[in-house]
Each structure stands twice: as C-alpha cells, then as structure tokens.
Image 1 (cartoon, rainbow, N blue to C red):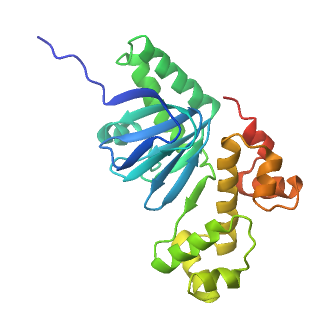
Image 2: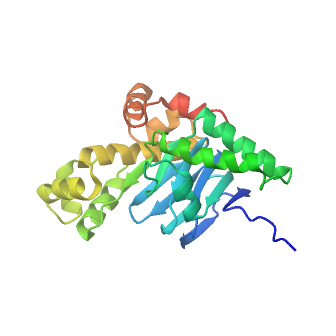
Length: 256
C-alpha cells in the first residue's frame, strides 16, 4: 500500500486569548506567524518584536523564542521543514528572525493556502506552489520597524530597564546612567555596540513600541500621547512616523 504524501510544510490556524502565550522554546521547522487580528509579542535572546494585526514574524528553525499574547489574537502559522525552506527559498537569506509588513501578495497567498486547508486540500500541488511562493515573497518584503534590540551585558540591561520604565522620557541621560550605576560614556558605547542603535534612537524606538502596544489594546491616540509624555498629538504623530514610517492614525486604522 502506497504511503500518503506528507508535505514538508504545515498550516495552523488558531485563536489565542489575551494573557496566553508560549514559554521559551524552539521549533524544528521554520515558522511564519501572521496576526490576522489582535497582537502578540515575540521575545528572543536578541530582543523583542511587537506583532500587531496585519503584520507577521518569521522565526527560523532552531531559534529559541517565547510568545506573549497582548490582546485576543487570531494567528495563521505556516511551518516549513528546514530542508524544504532552504531548497524552495531564493538565495537571499532567511536565517534571522524579523517582523514584516504583510504585502497584498503575501496576504493573498495566505488566504489561498488556508482556504485550501479548510477544504482539506493541504497537500494539493497548488497549495504547495503557494507555500513555496511565500518564501520568495518573504525575501522581498521590507522588515517592519517593531523590533527592539536588547543589550546583552549586565550594565546594558540595567540601563535598558531604567530607560524603559521612564516611558515619559522625564529623565536626562545623566540621570539614567546614574540610576544604572554606570557612566554616560559607557552607556553610549554599550548601546551602539550591543544594539546597533544610539541610546537616543533606542529610547525613541522603545517609546514608540510601547505606544503601539497601547494603541493595539484600544487606547486612543490622544490618551497614548498624554500617557507617554508627548507635548501634543502632533509631536507624538511626528515621533511615531519617524520610527514606523506611518502615522498613528494609519496604524490604528490598518484593515483587519
């Protein structure tokens, strides 16, 4: 008797309640997770990715990560066996975790694949071609600026903790360094070396990632601007655009 064909990929779709998630773990397969609705946050040793609705995150095989569900979320996940991902992807590397804006083509591919799965056609030739094409689209898709790299040294982590808790940006850099028991010179050197960002840029991105979290939980733009210490919604919108290349209004109004 002939053994049924087992494709080197799998499709998974599920609802995750707010507060849920998964502890630190790794997959034998590469994984694309698309947030069809809601918002999750993915943590790795390198940092964390905020994944609001209509964005996705790519996690290569073997990468340790944990998932935090920030709001009720509907997630679509595609898994590839490493050999298939390597053979089917174009030469551009897919060996690092990244968040991505889901292009209209990627959205159409996901809808086609999951529509086929709902009809029991996961192993069809068409579905396999669609899943292959997803890998090509991944290499051509711009990374979404929702990644916050984290410093790795003990001193860098102390600085990050002080800065992250000062979400209104009330502390000057001298005070941040003092509270982290280090110097401004060390602070500046560590952040560039360990995150690839100046401390000023890291702090701005951390603040905007926090803003995206709050907007995703349903707070208004005005509320978030006030809570994060911006002088006006206009100044908040300007800072938000500098980090994300989109306005808070566009982020909140992204189609679901």
